[in-house]
Amino acid sequence: MYGKELKLTELRDRIIDHSLKLFEMHGFHGVTVNQIVAESGTSKGGFYHHFQSKDELLYVIHDYFISYVLTKAEEAESSSQNPTEKLKKIIQSFVKVFHLYKPHISVFYQESMYLKPEYTEEIKSKRNAYKNIIFKVLREGIQEGQFRNEISVEITGMSILGMVNWTYKWYHPEGSKTIDEIGDIYVDLILNSLLTDETKKDPRFACYFLKDSHTD
Amino acid sequence: MYGKELKLTELRDRIIDHSLKLFEMHGFHGVTVNQIVAESGTSKGGFYHHFQSKDELLYVIHDYFISYVLTKAEEAESSSQNPTEKLKKIIQSFVKVFHLYKPHISVFYQESMYLKPEYTEEIKSKRNAYKNIIFKVLREGIQEGQFRNEISVEITGMSILGMVNWTYKWYHPEGSKTIDEIGDIYVDLILNSLLTDETKKDPRFACYFLKDSHTD
DNA sequence: TTCAAGAGACCGACTGGTTGGTCTGTACAC
DNA sequence: GTGTACAGACCAACCAGTCGGTCTCTTGAA
Image (cartoon, each protein chain N blue to C red):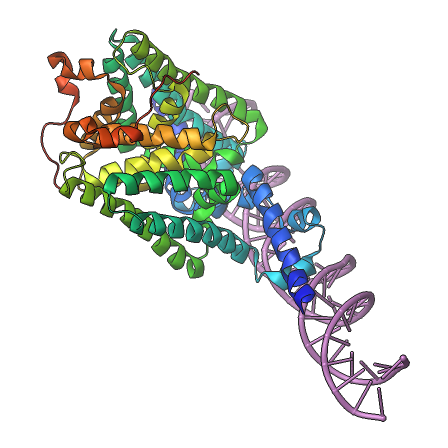
């Protein structure tokens, strides 16, 4: 039973892994089902035994990533009372995902428009839930006086999302900065913009900022 | 002679305009040449009279946008000696492009991976040129003591690009904020992070920051 | 002024290759 | 023997691109 369960998902995972690599390189439409099955060491039969269609595979990849990242953000949001700390944790948890799921993310942002209607709704609502967590934290931070009240919650929220999401376009695991360093830089940049002067002076918030010059 | 010239490019422009709309909605691979010609009120023959291939059309759209934006950045870079002012102008000029060329931008960021090899080089080099202008301005700002020296030029540069580029994912001309307001918010956010405390205190730099609370 | 000749702009039926998906068959576990 | 996991030949649809042809405008000789 146990061995059978493992075997049942073995090929499925192999197909997902290899499609991910192929989609990231050539795009969803740049990769054929034949290429996927060749790369995964299986056949058309194997593929269509596990997936109803190529479109379902695209959905599975989308859902895998957004579900993971949404859970992480919900955890970060509920784990702390301090909005600054919450925002930091959300950013860092998201940035860390690049280490594990960069291909998922690339596909998520490049190919989402090709999701078939029957799949879009769920993805869209999770995407919105994620966005709303960020908006909520920003509003809290303003209300509690930690964040400057002249900022626009929506534009600032989208700026943060943009800054962080864009990482998928250029991040390489072998680059000169680790993913944690990049996360720290983002936190420093964002909080430098958001925190009020008074909050910045508070020694309890010093830990959110970079200490030394980074060499490029 | 004059009338002939006008007619020569009329259909070509019509094809570009309509493809842009279709590509933005359904993606490059979600649109067939037959749909393009139907929408443009022409035929296969008309299309292939003006474009060697569907791929060449994609290239033309890419080049149109990146060339425009690169020129604007070069103008901004050479028009002023003050790095803060340069950065502001670059950001604002780019953001303004969303008003005019949002479909170009969407296609540029969504479909660039489908550019055929013979077209990628030129686009890539212009894209790099744009990036390098931002890096250059950041380095200047640090050297002149306007920008904090603990920032990382590359990560910060990519953050700025990400924040601004991401706008194409959510900007609507009918939204609650005009494109100029969005630009001002970006400038405020970025300069709040970049400028040193001393520079921020300098009254000559007050003009770069938002005065009032924005209502959402 | 006229009209023949040619060039460029555009038309649309057709094609050849590709691709997502199906269907029958097989090997093996229980 | 029955159901599950997979194999691989096959198919129908689709789609970028072609090609012979038409229509209009320009040119220039008579």
